[in-house]
Image 1 (cartoon, one colour):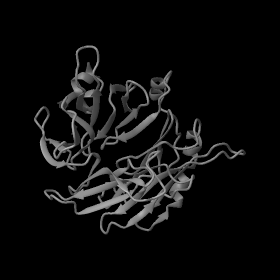
Image 2 (cartoon, rainbow, N blue to C red):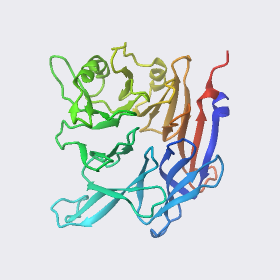
Image 3 (cartoon, helix red, strand yellow):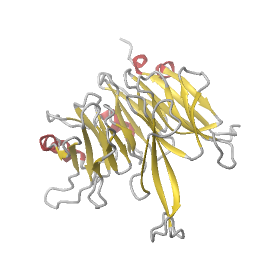
Length: 361
């Protein structure tokens, strides 16, 4: 009942398929990439950026596209980046799919200023790579797109993921500083066991911050229980620590003081009998609530954890976004057609006010 009272439906539609979504920089509105549910050829306006400024209100169409846009990122100064795919005949020996030699797929990011009709910058890379990454840093100075972190001042690459098998598989940009953290797969050391690596990198100096990497050594030793790499990374909003997940193991690691990095038992109990893994981590702006998303099963769920309370809260959801200034979480639900009469997929964007989840005295 308490969770129901805390939830507000901001958006509900069975006409728009939501590809991705974000809070605006001030947190007062929600932006989402949508695709019309109706079948047919791809025409102008079928792919759009929608903005909701108030719960239950009809959205404003911010921009329309002819290409299928997949991801959206919003910078603190209001620039909007969207990513898309494009297939080209290049004559290359490589192919993005069997039987398509000579054709390649590219990931492209277009960056728009507020009110501009044309992108002020376009970035692209070949399909081969982690194409789902599209994120601004908290200070807006860096954009992570695919395997590269770019400076938004001159659009030069500050860090690039190599193609080596030991190259990073996950990374996250710092909320305030010119830094990032990345996780590198490691391989079994028969004397000490599996030891995944997490590294802090200074994007301005283009060098590893060694002392902070050393401070994470003990936490990494404890998280290396099921797999050989950290799967999910997220900074605490003040940059004081890093949340790390490996399969169903979750640790909140401080950057300077080595804590007793113990799994949250509420999360452990929630995972009993499940085969899915943690897929997303976040912390509210006040540092009180830890938000954990996990998937690879049905239903997918979001867990809301408060260190001062003795229990967590659960809500079905594909993914979430944390409000930049308030203890609120935006959760995306996709409800597929079923035998109970639903004929179209329903898309919901829910705001959970975590202040309303405070346990009564």
